[in-house]
Length: 323
Image (cartoon, rainbow, N blue to C red; front, side, top):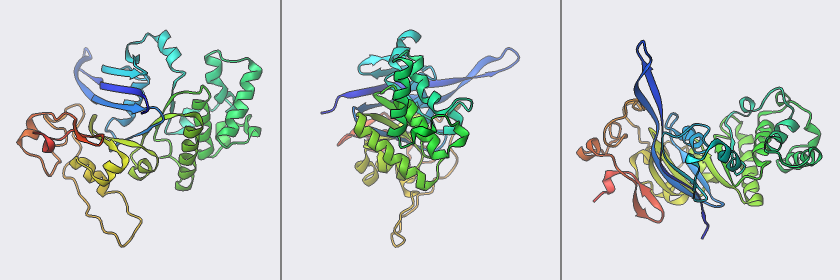
């Protein structure tokens, strides 16, 4: 059985709301609210949900690009949420991120070679000549010609820029990569190329992925297990086949009903949710989904559900499955 690489326990990230003449804190936006899940080595864990549900904030908080408000982030058994900046700097070699917009995440004044070399230089790895050789290797590994090393980001296509972003993240030989919507800004034909590249790199280097996306068909293609978030909370976690074949949470059912089916003869009943997503600054009491849930009852309005085990690594936070 594979070892657990990352374990997230009740992770929270609240952003203060300030008001009045003195700019005092008058409330908080609960972007991530006590999220828990774990990832095994070599696994791809998909994180899905509507825009604004806290997926990207969860990824950034795990890497401490945003400081967590509470909870634990155990990487190889070590709580990195409590590490000093100096200690965290060493851990960052094993934790890297691929961002959604490759153009915004690449410094336009640096060449492709400089961008890929930068992590090696910052961490003081190898000599200058060795770093240049490593950069050439990484360019070829992600499917780019090393002759492009002196080109700037604006001279590449969107797919090529994302390959540079992947090469930069991979240059330190990390153990875990968080990919935040890595293909959402790309054409459909390019999306498949990047997804196939990520799968090949995972097999070649033994990588573990957190794959953040809102496109459920993309997540189904690349993930081993999937976590569904709603309003900053984790509502369901299950292996891919189990989640797509037997969704347990009403929110997951609604999301899957909106996924297009390539067979025009197959008709799927669409579940249309009523109302709007509540504000994370003032989430509903009890289950956050209950104002929009067609199956809600009194307990849902009063008591927050916790993740319970349904079997086969399937967990759901819903009172429909409580005692």
